[in-house]
Image 1 (cartoon, rainbow, N blue to C red):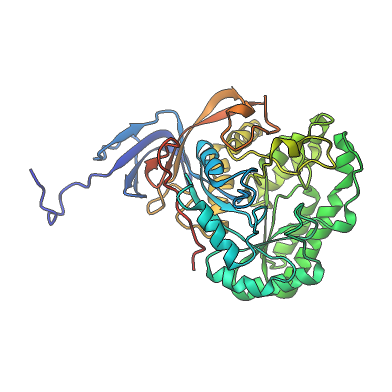
Image 2: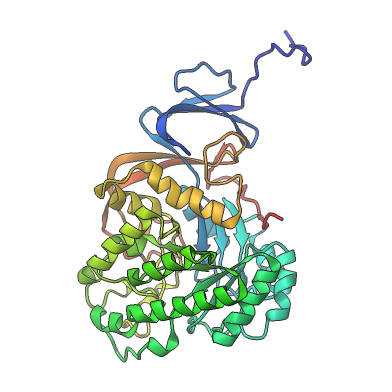
Length: 449
């Protein structure tokens, strides 16, 4: 019998209801039922509450988390698709509970430093992403006049380096260039995100097979000096700035003081800085190489303290893969990037729960925090009106990482053989479960006005 739509007493029948005894909501973890209408979360109810729906799934003791948002991913397509591409990267993201990524402007060819390159990037991604994707623009010497057009085309902000990037087509900004970029982004009302290392503090590694020798070439002072310069430029121009992949915990206090002075500065760190320690990296193990480098145990503890008290805002992957041949040799010549997009959640959860943190903390660091930073108002939270981007996560399952089983393009990761706790069971993008064997449903996102 058809129901008269004008009858307001007729019950709403939702498309899907997901129930979990461990639903991670903005105010903490509790039993709940999440009702989905179309692509959005419509209602949050009690776990046992009867809610009419075309389909109901009871996850029981599996946790239900908001989809992760990773604002620091190097997809490398077009131009270096043999390193990684949109299809492989976003499959890996979906398998890891990541429902939104924002792609970095390098190491693709051309780099995203003008609107022509952005159009090429979007064309390469079209119809090939299993999760939603946005794009950063790049700020390099000589492209100041391109930033306004890139901003109007919808990039989420602009990335720059203060030290060599590793690819010639994306050179660093000197101090004068940093100030000019800050001036422009302040006028546009956007953000400058900075790979902050002072090139004057970096040293030649020679032929370094020992990790401690490589570590000495990129001392903490390289970061702290560069971050001081970024803070000075932000103070001078009133720009909003962000420190990428913070490795040196010694910078936390100056970031904190800058905030107290009214400077709009945020900072991120990465799973590898929170889970790995220099003391346990074998000589010659170039899968562990990244820049800035993984530092010692005491530094790692200090990063965790900064994350716990809010001096570090969130955690993202800095997923930067390369062909296996580029990760061989010694620490001086191998590629400085770590592939972890698929396993960032269990890596962080394994360490977080050992330190007394809850799933709600991890969701704040890996979902809500990066979503808010990027202005993605409907991402990163389980709340009425948000996109129904969700993750079923088994927080108790222990398993061993096998690099060959991961879905990013090349089976190289420093976590190979590592025992982790927590496993992604299913991922939903805008209300539908992601099936990486079916057609991709990811959309391209633009900065919100």
